[in-house]
Length: 387
Image (cartoon, rainbow, N blue to C red):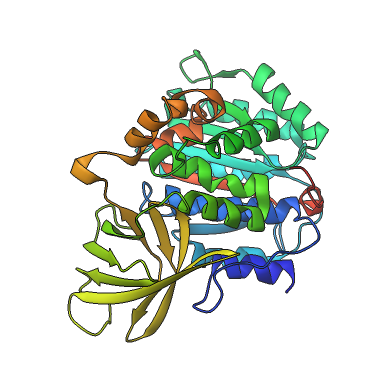
């Protein structure tokens, strides 16, 4: 199986094959980036019901391809197949488009932009100028923020992000100096992912799930799948419990489920009206654990619906819905995680990462227009062998 097909099967799993097979050659930076974008869309769409706008540069036939209102991973397949990574990285041009769209919307809600890149942009001088000009036209720094994330260990990219971090000074319309830009380097990302895999750290729900979603940028599809398997293995009592069903574009759950696991691979699901299952408010499911990780399916009259186990408390389904486990007694999984890990989520590499502007807003469920820019230049075609 070619890796593009493998990546598509990860983004749009079918009922027969939810686990991507391993391959000998390392993934490219583009493949890692798209795996990460998949995870970010799944998490951030919970707090941006309008969907996320994604800008790919260069585009298939122009400087930039724009995908509006992306709400679930099934919409990302066209991005994977539109073009191979090639050509120059005109990031300044793409960012200017995103800025112009943000100003056209106005700032009733703030705009939070995430830029996923592998190298120094070819128009880096224009990029710096565009950020400075945008800053001069906003009233406060909370209105517009940009977080750059490096995929791969290209030294030019590292140096450029350090320059942006240290030297890009922005002045708002009021004349006040503001800080609307921050950066996440390759080493920061890998340190955070490594930290979530340590014994006692539960990277699930809230902040943990958001950081876990970006494991793809550090690990690629195969690594991301094994990361999910690692997280899901922390369950000790099967899938028993209460779960809420979240649908794309809706802030409130559409159903609350009681799931009973016979610990032999069979699930009884109560509280699922309108599922197309035999019975108005019940359904069944099956799961298995293989050497490649978990497979899970919901069985309906329309046929099986495949699930992707993101972590021990979150499952995304191929029909665009998600299950999020409800903590007992109204607690929060991150609260339990922090207690079990001695507050590990509050500090260290993960704590540093979640203070970055894009992650901080999303983790705190700040209503925003969330935007992602993805580098599809020749820099992203490079196989990434970093661990």
